[in-house]
Image (cartoon, rainbow, N blue to C red):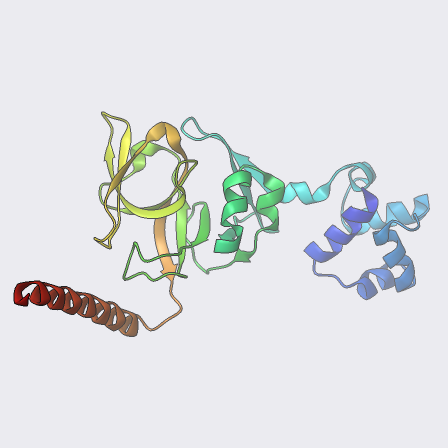
Length: 251
């Protein structure tokens, strides 16, 4: 694991090859060969590298150190949650954009996959586990397609609150952002869109893989302009319906 670990440690600690090579009294090209696995350092250099990063030599050679930034959370309602942490052991906010959605549905329990998702940072976040999801479509207007919903992980289904909004991961529907109405007796959720064009539907508790509670969202357009566009579209549609009714009456 030496080559992979050296590159990982250098990048994690934001050290350039030049800086680390100087600290080891090495040519930069030699360090580059170590990281590519082309050559191997002697035992004295291995000890020097391990001491520089405050590691045991055995860990440097045998462990995949990148896995130390991964954690697995387990609870009785959901199976596994993979998360990543930064160098200060604070949870990252991984971003699942629309391009990554299909992969996320297959790999959301895979630490390696979660580690490779892009990360976003917000200052002064409350304690919790957060993830960002890019939503598509117009089912939750006025939050428009392309917005990023920042959510906090829900550990138990009994924490769900009536008419609050959540990102829900399920094999039946994939990734959806909806307002929920829990029915604990029937062990079901009724999922409701804020856009009344979309009818409510039900989802059994057993079909749910993950639930994330809305915390905040990022929008990338002028909200007033978006609202005006929505209003204009509705008025245009209403006018078309009136004209259609008028044509039928006249005929």
